[in-house]
Image 1 (tube, rainbow, N blue to C red):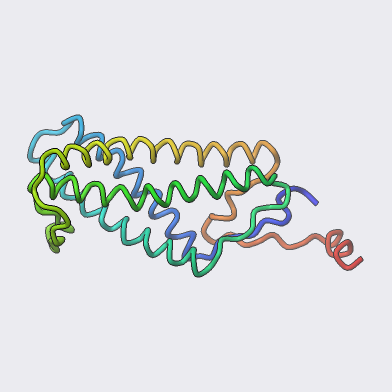
Image 2 (image 1 turned 135 degrees about the vertical axis):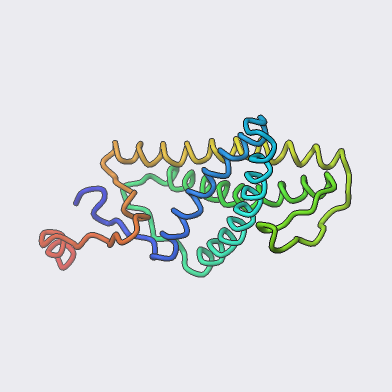
Length: 196
């Protein structure tokens, strides 16, 4: 049996949320850097900020849904060939990414509200104020939001690096999360071994 023969896949909802949230998070990080370094003229910057906030709040909702799904439906087991220390690292990495993706919109909302600005979802729904205007608090959460983006990007790089590392070890984990993928069927040789 090859190291990936016992591969199990995530359910389709988890797969869809994974790729949707991942793509949106990468776009948010890029937009955040553009906004932080004032790389756009004011009118375009205002539009990008509105979109950035709206998408960030959408990601927060999607991430809460994903967390609920994960708690209700545990993820599939990793292949048996992966050592315990790597399993522990995978759990820690996923927990850190979940925490950061949920924390980042919260940091952003507090940063904006403490700066004295209303926060709305694409200009359609205004969030209730979590904090009052407080410039020192605004600066603090602006720093959390900025550096949190870099931490999240580093976690994504580690996540992708682990995927490549395991591939080099002969364990191809991408099908676990690829939409439409199904667990491999056991080969006749494996069936005979299982029955024996």
